[in-house]
Amino acid sequence: MSFIAYDLTDDKLQKIQLDGLKWTIAHAHKNSPFYRKKLNEAGIQPQDIQNLNDIHALPFTDKVDLQNEYPFPLRAVPFDRITRIHASSGTTGKRKVICYTKKDVDLWAEMFARCYELAGVTPEDRVQIAVGYGLWTAGVGFQAGCERLGAMAIPIGPANAEMHCEMMVDMEATVFCSTASMALLMAEEIDKRNLVSKIKIKKIILGAERCSDAMRTRIKELMGVEHIFDIYGLTELYGPGTGIDCLQHNGIHYWSDYFIFEIIDPVTLKPVSHGKEGELVVTTLHKEASPLIRYRTHDLTRILDHNCPCGVPYPLHDRILGRTDDMFIYRAVNIYPSQIDHVLSQIKGIGSEYQIHLKHKENGRDMMLVRVEREMAGRKDDDASLSELISTEIRRKILVRSQVEIVEHGFLPRTQRKIQRVFDHRNGNV
Ligand code: DLL
Image (cartoon, rainbow, N blue to C red; front, top):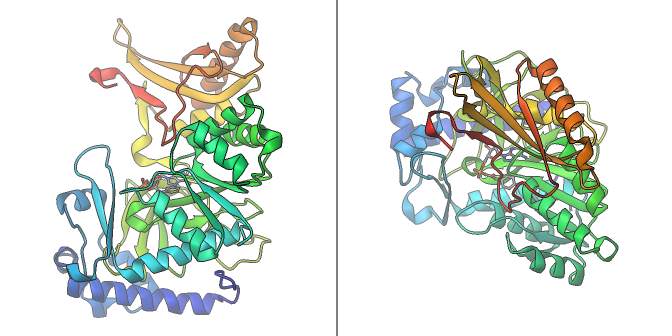
């Protein structure tokens, strides 16, 4: 049995999308007071949706709507149909709470099983799940997908490294699922404990945060795995599992029969031309309890040409390149952390871990300190030339001056969750 619809043609997909869009708008208008008000204010009635291009006339939804409407934002079904809630913490303000009906939970598991299948996971596999269980969508999402596929779930959550290593060896886990930060932490522990020859992990599925090329390479080397897959998702859109890369690793195949993805310019809010980078906006096609209409994810990506040799009919988007709210301004230049990742990923002799500290100097000018770990076998004697090289590359590629400090391998914190890399100490922030 396959969760991937290999026979999905463009015509079939367009019909699924148009039916789903019409259903979503009618359902939200009828059953969600929040959406009814929003659609009425925009002068939209359900019957106005006649073709897929009509989506462009719909109003956007944003995380502030979810926070303003706390505790049950977007709700479009009566409480007796809600079987579960999940929530994610915003950096500021109230948590974003999302409701699920039985069908929502079921479709999410189906979608997730598809992710595992695309990554080549089979019922023979043993899947060690190291993401958090609870209000966060991660643990239960990976778990339900694994059970739907029929593989063996090893539901550990973000426990300590000791427990993970023990279970990985004893249960002979073949797939490891975690955040990128946790995978690095585990890879280093496995290396430290000389366990590489004792583990059977072949595939790692990472998500919830960006993972630089340097980090990917390091995790692969230390754990001796063949493939690292990038899984995307967000609480508002069911959770993890909205798309994943296939064995070709050309980009992330996303489930276009479950939602419509648009890429917009985050400033003008107009669609960008095909293939251009912009903000991902999502509209769900079947979600009952908390449907999304043109929800602004603030994640930056682009739609890629769909000519992946793997043969699956689902379109591709690029890895998440950053978030619109990740950007910081330093000496009048807009910088995304991913730009620093790219510079560092090209440099030999350093590890994958780094931090960016922004400060005010006494003379009033801003300064950027980039702290980078030396590679494991690196020599202190090379620090001065390495920091010079990094600073020159940052100046050449990002056009700003920076100070670079090389620190001991393992000096920067490791985390089991999403890592923070940018620390803005200007205006008293940490
Ligand atoms: O992070 C869901 C998830 C859990 C996805 C585990 C994958 C694996 P939230 O906590 O709501 O949900 O955070 C969603 O995380 O808008 C992105 O900014 C970021 N994110 C998620 N997956 C990726 C990824 C989960 N593969 C937010 N690459 C999203 C980069 C990611 N960023």
